[in-house]
Length: 226
Image (cartoon, rainbow, N blue to C red):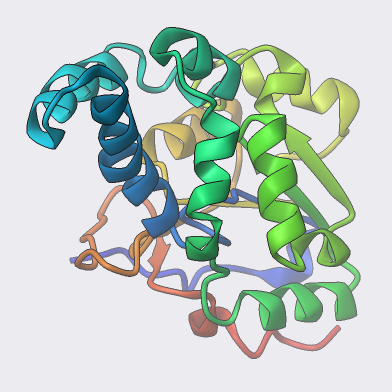
């Protein structure tokens, strides 16, 4: 049974930190890109079948999953001999904002909450997705882990972020679909945490018992007035 989010006290929350891929944006784009599109293009470049390309690439992904290199476009361009940004542009039509996200962000603004995007996405990916969506106009700040030199999974991440974006973990809500990232935030002292049960619209809802969780942002709406 998934834990509920009923304990949120918006009067005690000043800032909302939001993940991008799987939280604000549909993770289907990323899953399709890395699990289907990249293996297809990699196989075409090397005369491999799609199955053989996947068999080679997926273990290489897993070897560095959760590290900054895993999220780095430049790393994979070098490793695979492919222009990863160009390949992302080939399927950028799949980039989509999750339902109710914009309404949620607008409601946060109406309440005077600071909205900060905190993502592991590489700057080149971030630029592509912000151009494709209207997200940047609904955020006070955008921070990539690549600017800080460590992924969000690292215990060093939050102290480094605090140095450039001062916040009180007792008064900040953090929403992410990655449970390892949420655990790192909990270890740092975040009081308010929410997981996302449906990061990929094409996959079944996950059951999450380690954190309060939502399927989508409609569950938080309407936000209480000031």
